[in-house]
Image (cartoon, rainbow, N blue to C red; front, top):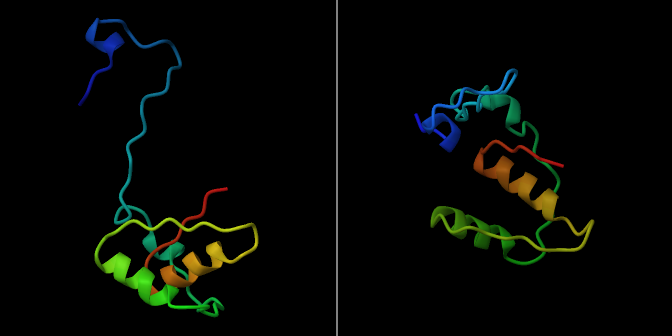
Amino acid sequence: MQMNSAEAAGVPPAAGARQPETLLTMSEINRDQYLIQKEPYYRPVHNELEMYEAAYDARIPVMLKGATGCGTSRFVEYMAWKLGKPMITVA
C-alpha cells in the first residue's frame, strides 16, 4: 500500500475524509451487463472495419475523430458488439 506525504509524516486523516476507492477489474464486475446484446446498425463507408480489427489485433490504439453526428460512437458500438467486448460510455 502506498502512503501519501501526509501519511508518511504521521498526520492523521481529516474527520470524514474518504479513503481511496479500489479499482475493480471487469472480471470482478458483472461484465455481461455491458455487452451489447443486439447487432447495432452500421453501414461501412470504406475499409474501416478491417483497419480497426487489424489495429485491435496488433494492440495499436486508435483515435476516432469526426464532427457531431458523423457516426464515431455508432462505429465503436458496432465494433464492441462484433469483437464481443463490453462498452461503457461516459458523458
